[in-house]
Amino acid sequence: MSIQKSKPVVLQVIPDLETGGAERTTIDVAKALTDGGWTALVASEGGRLVAELESFGAHHITQPVKSKNPLTIWRNAARLGEVIRDRNVGLIHARSRAPAWSALLAARRENIPFVTTYHGVYNQKSRLKAFYNSVMARGDTVIANSGYTANLIQKRHPVAAGKILVIHRGSDLGALSP
Image 1: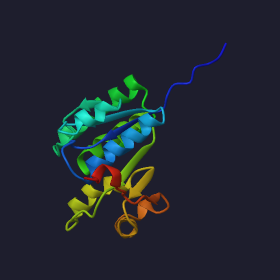
Image 2: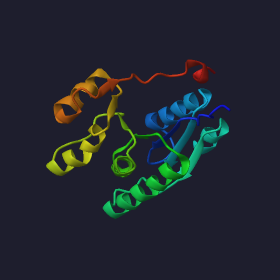
Image 3: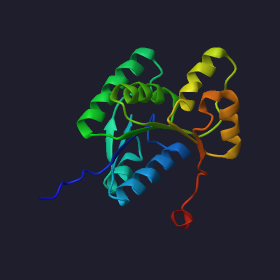
């Protein structure tokens, strides 16, 4: 008798799937996961890229993760916790600050790894904004899109030292060919 191993499941969380670099990277990572035999889930408010995401076997979960309302963030953490338990999620990856707060709470409650990607430089002119931004440096691994961004994260959020990984954003030139 052989024991069947389940496919690893990764849940990415992003505000929406309309357009932009973070959204494109979400699609590309989901495609790489499904191509590798993993299960790719994306929670967002939806958008024009959902059809592309689902075209290669990834799954979209519509949730109001774009909201910055603290009560909605708290509720989203509970919703994400349900997804984690129901779908046997092994890792949650947040790509934006508001959904990252919900994802962090859910990951800690469910005891799974939490990864963030710092896609750019956030405005940080007050202590409140610095605290809000700090969620992106609280991942078990913090992905920075450049060396510049990695240095800024380390300067602003010393707690991230030793957890920052630089992964430069690439482009599929074949997809851009006329």
